[in-house]
Amino acid sequence: MDKDLAFVVSGGRTGTTFFGNNLSRFIPDAFSVHEPDVVTQKSRRLLMKRIGDFGLWHMILGRALGQTGIRLLAEKRLTGTGDHDALVAAIHAHRDRYFSRLDKPLIVESYSQWFGVLPQLRAAYPNAKIVAIVRDPRDWVVSWLNHGGRHTRGDFVTAFVHRRLTPDLVGDTAWAGQWDEMDAFAKLCWDWKLINTALADFAKTDTQTRLYKFEDLFGTEDDSQIRDLIDFVADHGARRYPARFDRALWGQKVNARGDKVARWQAWSPGQAATLKAHCGPLMEQFGYGQEAPWSDLLAA
Image 1 (spheres, rainbow, N blue to C red):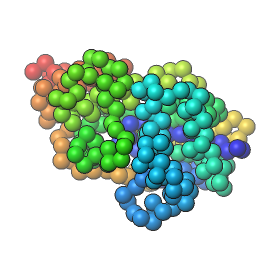
Image 2: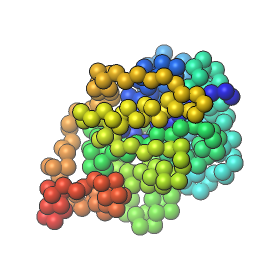
Image 3: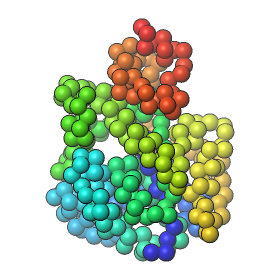
């Protein structure tokens, strides 16, 4: 397959929709897409297009039976039930035909669930660029609570045979016995640690992976990091795709949600302690949680 590939990976709520929708506007020779084979509630027309792209088995029947989908592959690897070579073969089966049918030479896919199979994604596509995006866990948890649909009764993921990962499934004995008593806030804190540990560990050793902080990409007047990301995605050695930066487009909000849940400055000391218990060491590694008010909240 004579295509250049790039993948944007995170825990969601980090601008992946923006990149999937807009990187092709920054890099004209690229095709960019967000979650190309996810069953969507957005519109029947979009769902029918995806069935046309990937087939009825992959999109509907296989998912209903728990046999297709990148989320399933991530679950298999993280729970130790998936063989490496079989997962690599499954990635090829999930994506090769779709990528080969696209007419652009550079394809950029943004999808959070790649976090769980990064070693297999690298084995499947050795030359692909991988962008990993992390976000301050305090803002990430609030964003997911405002967005809804995760660790709630209306969780769309569990509508089929899929399941959310839990400490018991991935062998995290420190939290397995407490999971059933944890609320959505605490479970999201645990999710953040799981996802971003995978991203950080992989980025440390993979030379074709670059890790960015959400806060350096959005909500700042400094556009150096977003420009660096675009240039990184566009650079494929012998093929360097022309890129142009649109500052107005960069400033648009995509998939934002309201502020039903207060940001960390209004949290209780108990909430702050819960987040620190799960995320503390890793958030410090990323440079989060250095503010004096955060230290005061933890000490209260």
